[in-house]
Image (cartoon, rainbow, N blue to C red):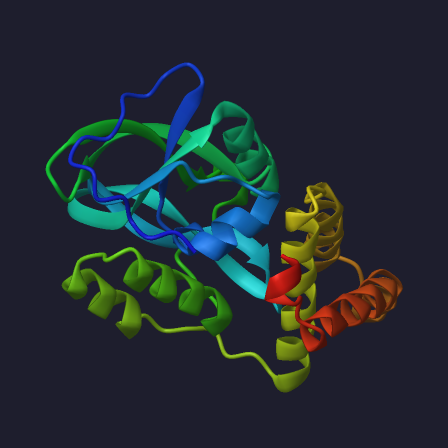
Length: 248
């Protein structure tokens, strides 16, 4: 797990490195690294003025109804983590976020907590995938954001605002499915094959957004989820046999 860098002066962005301003679950170091086996070179708590944290990226209604992005909002401030990645790792991050089918990348100027200004990219929901209004995310997703904010030392008042955000209530079966699928996503990310989960989530999203009858949707969900959850359950067993630190 990576703690915020304490250096006073972030390195200038070069042609080889790209700065990303993480505002959602990617603030969590383990989550960001696990998404696509990324190497975080530096990280700084920072803020972006005249933008707000938005939960308006359309997800899968019963699994993850919304995901985080930013939207222009004069006078508002969104806090996050300024992260330096190699160009290859940034490209992998973009792919793990759905490529160009979920987010657009906005070029912004972010101010670190020590007062330095750095140009960076931040993710914003594509117009075609944007909800008409913000929708509460799941508790699982919110907890990643809240934990990431605390681990990176974000402003306490901003953390209080995150703690006060409402969340979408899921049933026990949906919670189990969610844990299995997103645990598998982290596993595939660490193995360097995040595209496998992208295909799965795109399939689930297509079913969710289709106008098919409920029975047809149910059959398609069963066809897609049965093998996926079977594999996810097997992968989940790895947590029962933690790796011996002496062998690491």
